[in-house]
Image 1: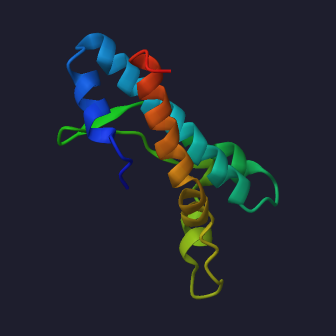
Image 2 (image 1 turned 180 degrees about the vertical axis):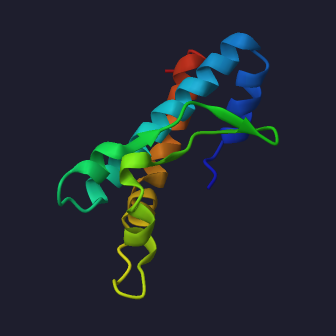
Image 3 (image 1 turned 90 degrees about the horizontal axis):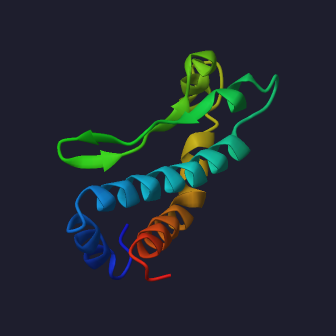
Length: 121
């Protein structure tokens, strides 16, 4: 996914140093929250344990790329069986649906937060 002008925004944020890092991290966390909320909305609810277990991680860096992870915690260990199905049950890809429905909104949130941090909003 790419938004028009995203490279320029990221470049401007990187030039800011530590302040830019904080802006970038906040944007990633906010976008992660958007996706997390969408996945929670799509999650099946029998007891509510699965929905309550879905969390967003803090900002992490892997191979030079910052990211956040969203998924169930230990209490929702069975989410993989729901998402992908088993030989006995049909797949219910709630995490994939939640991500697909919210990815554009998450990218807009990143762009908005970066612009806000740069004083362009």
